[in-house]
Length: 321
Image 1: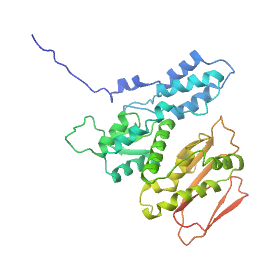
Image 2 (image 1 turned 135 degrees about the horizontal axis):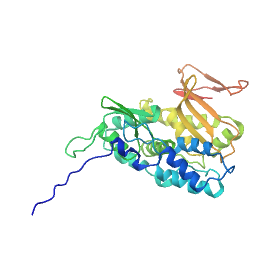
Image 3 (image 1 turned 45 degrees about the vertical axis):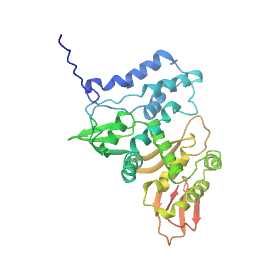
Image 4 (image 1 turned 90 degrees about the vertical axis):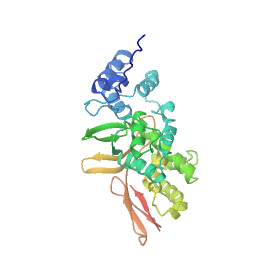
């Protein structure tokens, strides 16, 4: 009796299969129209624009011109949205955001310097260049390329473009960014014994939403950075920008955009209001280094009329509005 020959083929990167694991833009639009859409009940194009930023972005083939929507995130969001045709207070899916532990498990096998280099590129630049491993040998050393590839296979990074065998990986969408923010908070809590508690930091968000001020946020960042002084800011996780994002992402009041492209270039952090919350203000934050001898840092509000000074800035850098 002849034994059958089994031939396996990895189709992950094949163009013709790119759309198998999610919804295309057209499929999502047809899904909404065919289920919950009613004339004049809500703005379809606005809904699609927001969902594009929150749930779209996955691409498995460098040759594909299309990005696809995460089906779990889409269906979870629409199931909540359809009840009152209002955005839920949290656009993330708890079943997905718990995946920060996957990031930890994928990176923990690397030396800390290499772990930090990956997260710094992904977190700050929201893009990292690498090769792509298509098979893994447990007898060989675990490499940075292996870790990045596994992040990709788990949907935590996706292909932006590929040239000459070098892949530009990016974070697929806003919800996946939240997973990285959860991971970074766990790093702070475990390695630096720093706690992030929404109840204790609630006054920060009240001040921002009702008064348009960030003095409590600046004060909290300073309190967190003080015990980190011995590290001399050599590690990216001690960056004030990382700390600010870790604080702000505790509350879902703002949509957080890092390195947002605008007409004049990029901005460090852009905080826009999320519909279910009643914040009166939105924020654009820029981060600047100041020398130790500097004693003051000035900033102006959006209308250009109000100027505030933070006295006795000790070291490092502070967020400015």
